[in-house]
Length: 289
Image 1 (cartoon, rainbow, N blue to C red):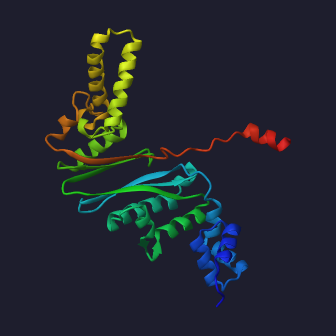
Image 2: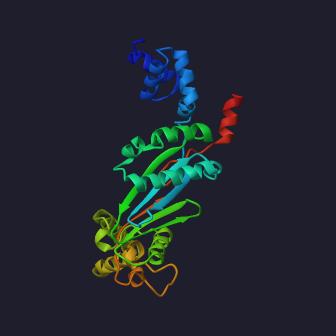
Image 3: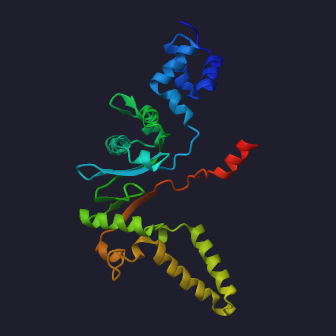
């Protein structure tokens, strides 16, 4: 058996773009033969997937799953490169399978999820294989998992563009779904005033103060103006004070009927991912020079 050195692993990694551990496995499986190791990686779909690792995956879907007993819920975002791939039945099946797996196994974090096993394969390997077979970079981006003694609800909007998971102290499935839909539509940043981060409030106060000054308001009433605008801000961003999207005569506190929201998560597909902007005119110009 050939000794697998760090230099051999490095060389194979540079040739294929595959990860270090995958390169080591390939060399071990092929007794240190680089050419065979490359074939081994290609056969596993790893080399092909690695070439796509630098691409931007900002499309995809957000999926939700709640256990049959209603005690565990999950929300997960899995990305790909195009809407076309996101509509692929294989991709849809992948997102549903991983959402259910999160509910079943309750992983502590993304690393634990990637290391967990579905049908004899690590989740990370399943993602790599999906990248190879679907033909686009697939990325398991983030997830949450809730355990509940009350009522869990979820809502997926526009086929996975926005997903919400919410935990209530009680109520029924219809109430939980209504609250989840509210969160999807109105995008609150907190359950109530006490949960709004202090730095966010201070920033809003500064903005409100400068607005009042720019409007030429008398200095003696600026503090009251700021106070009024902060109250309005709370009504916009605090879930409990928001106007219910299905009935403008009610707030979310009204429809909860004594129940409380203890936690919620809202994922918007691709938020925070910087999408590469293609400049085709510049690309053609560069090729002509």
